[in-house]
Length: 428
Image 1 (cartoon, rainbow, N blue to C red):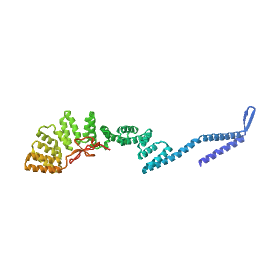
Image 2: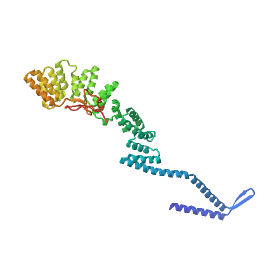
Image 3: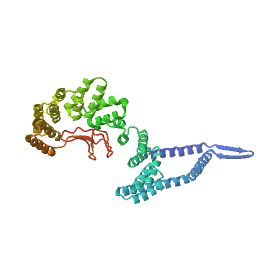
Image 4: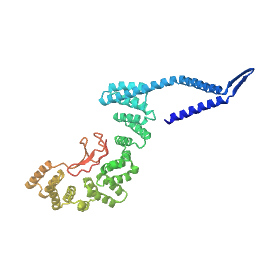
């Protein structure tokens, strides 16, 4: 409404100006050589207006004609975009329906309409991979990785393929490139951590594992495994492992050995006592009693080691064995019978009872009868705890970060009748 009023006002002013000029009169003179032209002022002004309109129309028509090819191209591109988007949608539906051949056909149409855009290349790679054409999929991922706007997507696809092929050097290189392309991406960090485990780079696996997603056992195991690889930082890593899980026997033994080697045997024994209090382990008892030559001294050392976890089956077993070795059969019988009656005895306790009755009863009818009784009990008793791979069942003499039998990292744990104190690494 306001625009109409403004137009009427302008038209009114124009008519008024034209009438005013006509009433004023006057002539516009144009002289060219001997030629003289004279026209009224109002007619000259009208001619100027008409000339401007005609010139503007000619220029506008010329501009429209020059823009005709561009408009045709724009309409064609718009049509291709619509058809390409429709083909992309049909390809997504085909992929979701599990029909890779149809998806590949639709994606070829989309690429012919839209060109090699990030989403068409990504769909091409996924369709080729679903169809089992990994080489073609990798070609699409490589093209995607060459684009700045799709580099991370391309590297991710290539990294996934390299890990499936177990090409670990290529996977590590691609993971580093992906992290450079997308710094701080959680997925890249997880993949690098998994690669570090696969390639047995325990120090990198420890550094890449998120602290809030790593239990004490797993962190302790990774730190100890890293210490076994890196002598320069082994001391700090062993302490880190023990701090992460004070009940992890291999870490306690490593720290204690280093403390003893540095001239601090008392600190080494204190370390072993602290771990025994939390999780008694036969290797700790063996290391604690190793420097005691005298049999009675070993009994006293065993009492010192076990006094803060006196009723644990391992404590009773080590006390019974050391007492028996020192000839204290009464003390040994009291400890071993208490262990048997507690219901926590394994095969080792019953075999120790066989040895004790052999010492007390000798080769007599009562001795043979007692031996037969304890041997039957040992055959029916749970086996002694051991380091065992939970993936393949292989028994190991000591803890290792990886099972060489099946190649699985982080599955060797302390198993048996005693409470499990494993050293599980983070696995994927």
